Image 1: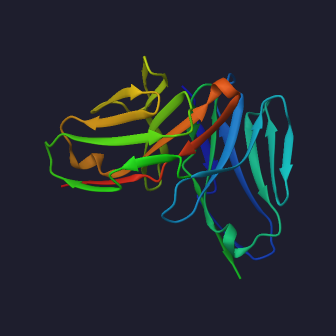
Image 2: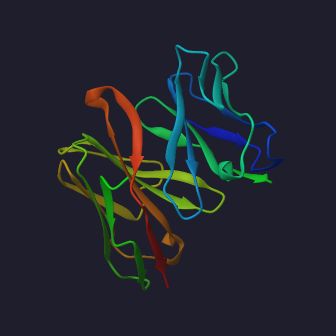
Image 3: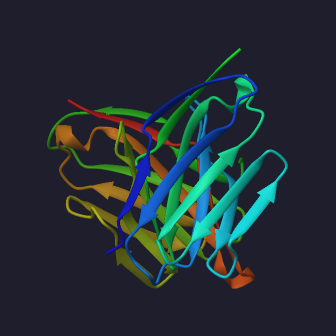
Length: 109
Length: 114
């Protein structure tokens, strides 16, 4: 089955800095790569996704890149704000999803 | 997302008891999933259903069973609860018929097995 590794497990940045979270996957058949944000006590919510026929996707301050050859994908958040503080999960799959273990992002004012 | 609801939101039970967690959705989605979340382990898939007559095991199905009573309802049962089933349980839905792979999560059920 699919195996997704996510790094780092925790990330602390100053407000205004950029944050990068990286994931690797094992199954070359995976073609869908979403990122979810989970605030404390809340449900996970999709923030951005990318499919295997696309190398990069951007939505305002958030971008995701995908390298199919190397089987890795990354989330980039620019100009971080305190409200970006949350746990972020990457996932990979084609009919079901396998999630990474999460990255706790803390943005300090 | 109020379109996916879970009951109960919190539950305390004892070892050996049978319990059921329920999930309902008004989104009209065909696919439904059950995950458990443990600190530091992310979300792990327990069972999933692509249609009313379709049930599939996920990564960690041992000790659990499910029922898809209707397109809108998907229940998770713990036949004989044990303490290591203490976790946060999420239901999710997706609408592949519409070409949307996004999974929409319910609010979660926090389960404590004593």
